[in-house]
Image 1 (tube, rainbow over the protein chains, first blue to last red):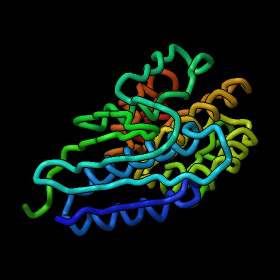
Image 2 (spheres, chains in turn blue, green):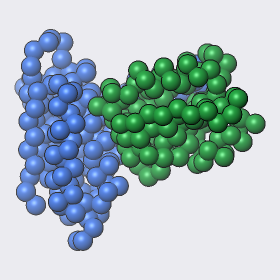
Image 3 (cartoon, each protein chain N blue to C red):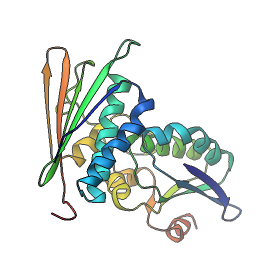
Length: 141
Length: 112
């Protein structure tokens, strides 16, 4: 299966069209619907996090994502020049005790970890590189 | 993305969402969602039956809306979640702060 390479600005307005490209790629690879949703969710969470929290300036920054379907997983590599953020070591939110105390922050990270079978991170120069694997079954393999 | 509010009875209203509650979807719907839920001045049953995907942005919207409703002395209950949406709700333990049930009948039973 070929690799899907996406490259886009740090603008959430382009998230939907890139997510659609991702979905088409996964459907063409016969990935089951439930796994497609997991991959889409991980993609949404990480790109949203980069765009919302990655940059202290208002400049345009490129984000690159490579996606590859293997026999039993989808591998994604996110590359961005935002502030250093290690999703493996970042602290997860405390479990809320009540609606008054619930703090929505950090839930994206929690979902990313729960939905992924593997997450790795490295800082290369001024860039973050995050590797995510999500387990799949394909519909006809 | 569709949002529809309908009265169930004098005390309860149903807020039905059709579409993806991901970052782009929440950007489109959040203002109307919060306004509809809080303006009803009733308990709100959020129907997620027609929601295929829910991300942390959608959960944040549900929590902030539930808190606003709670502050007005009403309750919010979520029902109809399936597949990846139910899996997402489980992962963040939403049921610890907002009741999550399978059907509208179960939601109404909680409010009886």
